[in-house]
Figure 1: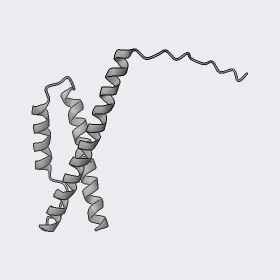
Figure 2: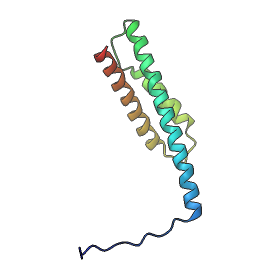
Figure 3: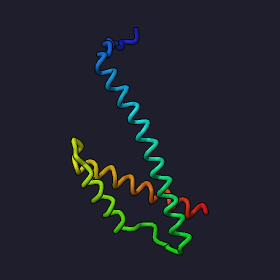
Figure 4: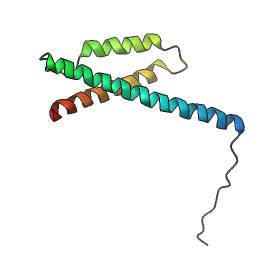
Length: 104
């Protein structure tokens, strides 16, 4: 015997399983939307580069996005948590734009 104790697996409650399936479906949609947003951000980056703009970061635009997101938030997600998510999303999009410029 290995000395390991096994923890009995309890069957999932039907309501919990149903709700988790909905969460899983939403997660797939969110991933698709995030990737669509990232691709649009890349297109913006290419347009800025084509127009001769060297800066990747646009602080004014980032503030506008964060304000718009904050105003759209009706909860239950806390404002601070949502803004952390969006700041990370903006940073990831900037990283894509920088990578595109370095690759191109």
